[in-house]
Length: 112
Image 1 (tube, rainbow, N blue to C red):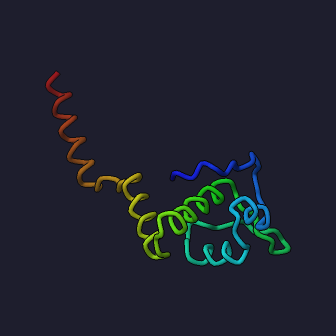
Image 2 (cartoon, rainbow, N blue to C red; image 1 turned 30 degrees about the vertical axis):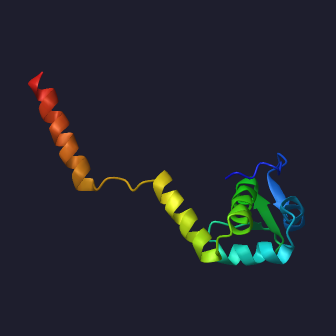
């Protein structure tokens, strides 16, 4: 993400109003994005108040950048984030592949 103009304070939790002020967005936009982007999951107090973690604020900043600066649609931003996550966390090799690799390593070790 290229948006470095926002400095996120070093806190554990942020109330929705604080996040709205940081991102310069109305609170209803944050609530809407929460319903659209599954990775945005603020904790709730016993009174139901949203508490965003720093990671949530960083994700919201990225979403804002994609939607407002890069002019992505909601579905385009979702696809971009999903694709990027898949590239950052490729799937683990299949169990059979691991067993085959271990067998090869065992054979190599038995030679010595």
